[in-house]
Image (cartoon, rainbow, N blue to C red; front, side):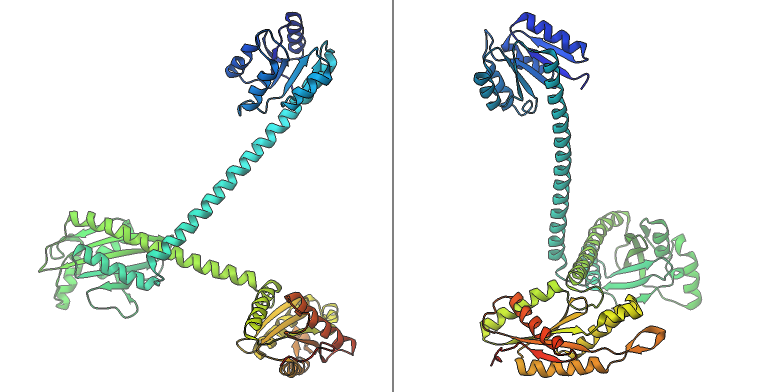
Length: 498
């Protein structure tokens, strides 16, 4: 590694001079010291890439210097090659035990010394790259952890703030709070989405709105101006404001009597395509709204809008979590439980059976010769058939039962509070339903299938786990298929639970 900085520390002037000359000739940046006491000072001045350190100095102990280097976090990764005329079995063992990278015997051979230096510098480069990569990974991991923790805290805070209120309830709550804070008798929350008429979604103290009320903006010039400019609009007196000139002409023609004197329209943004306005009004017999009221109202409204936005984030988070949970538990093709969810539900059901001395039965259903469907009609038709089968099973079970796709063309139905006799009778009805059902194969018409069903009931001798239970149902299914398919069979020799 050319241009690498090497620190040489040796009390022998001739060796120091020779080493320095050889290393400089090979492109290394060399610093040197004859006194052991100067080694640490030189390390402080500029950290080298490698150190050649003598074992013995008149003023210091090389072993102690090595220990100091390796105990300092700044220097512990620097390779140190110990140099000594002492026998290797004495010096090498001790120095390597203290953290030295290598040991060089005096007198040294130039080619060997250069090879050892180059090997250690290569290792240092590899180690530095690995440490940098590890540091970057640790920083990214810490960032992800902080982000996850912040999201968790956000969800917790939002849950406390909204108290499980719907968006409509939040708008009504905010309208009342804004009106109360500003001592108003008229306060409305108006939402406007691009391409649609603005609509009143909440009011406070004034006449209640049933559902939502659409507004014609030509009757409300301050709302139109607030939405278009994104800035608050103050109308101190509708009877004199230039903004209301056309509206006053309409009032005059229609004979409209107006009880409102002053208005503030405070715009806010909820999402890229939706905006809103807090519409604040005072009557003629109340003090008119002024510029100071706009500033105060804007502060209150910003806090209110933040609550709305947090509530929307919470609603989206809850909806996303529910959707992700559903995806994690559902077979993507048939929309019934997947194998993982089946295992969890079945384990819980078996635990309930043990606690309450009840029973649960399991049906393992396999579509006979299903491979022929895929081979003859294609996998798309095969997928349609599997979805139809899942629908038939879902329609046949009770609310307490659950259906799962076990894998391929196999399905499982769990029947709580059902013994072997009831489960066998139900399985027989299912077999008949599947046999009679015309499965669609697109424009080519329909096809018919049969199914083999294995029935197992828990508790049973020797069965403790979900795997035991499923293995029992699989044994029963094997009997049904071995005896000719299109039939229902139970576990051979298993007594029926009471």
